[in-house]
Image (spheres, protein in one colour):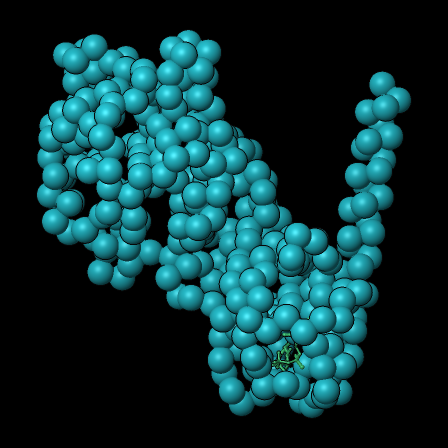
Length: 324
Ligand SMILES: Cc1cc2nc3c(=O)[nH]c(=O)nc-3n(C[C@H](O)[C@H](O)[C@H](O)COP(=O)(O)O)c2cc1C
Ligand SMILES: Nc1ncnc2c1ncn2[C@@H]1O[C@H](COP(=O)(O)OP(=O)(O)O)[C@@H](O)[C@H]1O
């Protein structure tokens, strides 16, 4: 995937550009449906180029005084859009100034002038430009005037409800990461460089934990303990994660810390990714360190049992398929 971080970097229109526009926070199954439609139109029908346009930072983090807590970092978003198979990603720098861009200017200058659009694919609820004037009715009229068909893609439904970034944010904030995964088509993930903690995990508790600091610009999952999967240096490990403020101790610092199973390496400063698979319990203030250690032991046993059960389930479902 080729990435452009400003329209001025695009010197020549793309061949038969089939374009979608959106914020794509979380790159969930609804977004993936849009990308599939664009890819199908670009490749199978037009022999052209699939283009996604998004904004950096997320418009609501600029326009809303209270900001927005995002599901995915820009780094993750780029990875996921690339995995979806999109050829070109245009990341338009978003500012209060850019928010004043009229929908007409956007269509004339960016879609037609810069990209050479031949087809537009948008989600059922999408609108852009000053005052959200670039809504579906407007785009259909512009499409007819300039000769680019506009395809409106309906939501992806799960349990009869549309999948949306807002719905996923609510689930993660409530700790229901397992359900969020079914709406995203992948697990909710946090990532970052391993930080130094207070050196209590290994020496006092008997369970070292690799600590990540959490940035408040992103969603903070419900405080508590999760079954986790850790990706480090090209390998995947199982583990158990605690998100919260360690109320048993006085520091009160927000942290995500993961005890990795069958692992014994010093990884301070290294980049790790943690997938949150299932919520186990909320964070508790324990009367002493021995009670906390005992609880962590129980958390580990439960995590291992859940993972073994999942493996067993997978083996059965593969068995079922082979038997058909
Ligand atoms: C599985 C697990 C569960 C935890 N649960 C709690 C908890 O309920 N309450 C709490 O205060 N701290 C909890 N912690 C955090 C520990 O207090 C923390 O890992 C320990 O103090 C080590 O901190 P350090 O990495 O800064 O040395 C948990 C940690 C793990 C790995
Ligand atoms: N199984 C493991 N899980 C997590 N971290 C481990 C493990 N084995 C070794 N480590 C290392 O130990 C560090 C955590 O030890 P800990 O005593 O909790 O110190 P800190 O308070 O700095 O987090 C991790 O950052 C990592 O470098």
